[in-house]
Image 1 (spheres, rainbow, N blue to C red):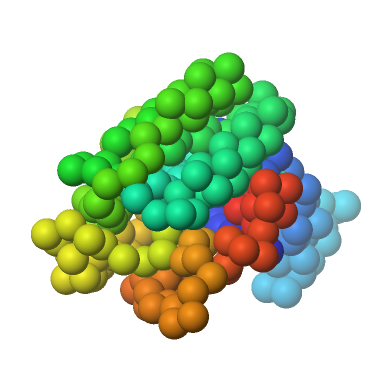
Image 2: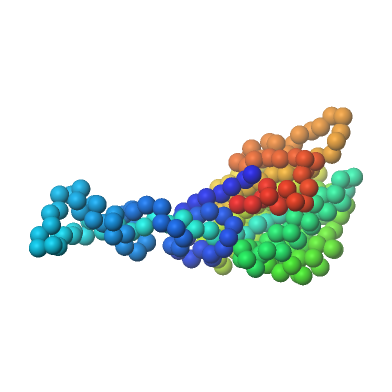
Length: 254
């Protein structure tokens, strides 16, 4: 399972998906500069300094003050980039992502997640589903997912980066996960060099955790291009053939 735990942003929207060190949640330990005042930690810091009790009082210094490091959960933005170009397995990929997104959105009101879907096919990628937590909107949009044509994967990755940057400006505290469902090949003019450039920009931006789902069909000779793509994105890679809508939902759980 792909998991992400990080230090939470003060403005991070609370939710029930990814673990994070946040202003809310259970106390883990006392720390300098933590949230609130951790009384026990403050007294221990004073004792280590050599403070003494006088008239039932402990003289505290500013350096003695300790807050709490807390662990809670926050909601996330999950961006799917789905290769729906002209291959025999394109429709199975659409069914897989449709089931996963719909399943995840069913409890979005609890987790407060947002999900977006970019379809990669034809002359250029399409933002099929802008970031939303609405199940009804997702179902309507996913029903019209375009299929066939070439594979402008590099452009799809750059579109995802643009979306991540735009959403980060809007909600800087909402951590993102980028899920790329593809066989790893770009059949547009950008080709492999375009993929390398796009991946470098995504990793450099540092706005998302990344996951690649290898959608290459069962062929006698597999190109296995999804694995170098995953390496370029500093991401784990799993096979679509080993997954279904249910365990895809588990796999992308932060």
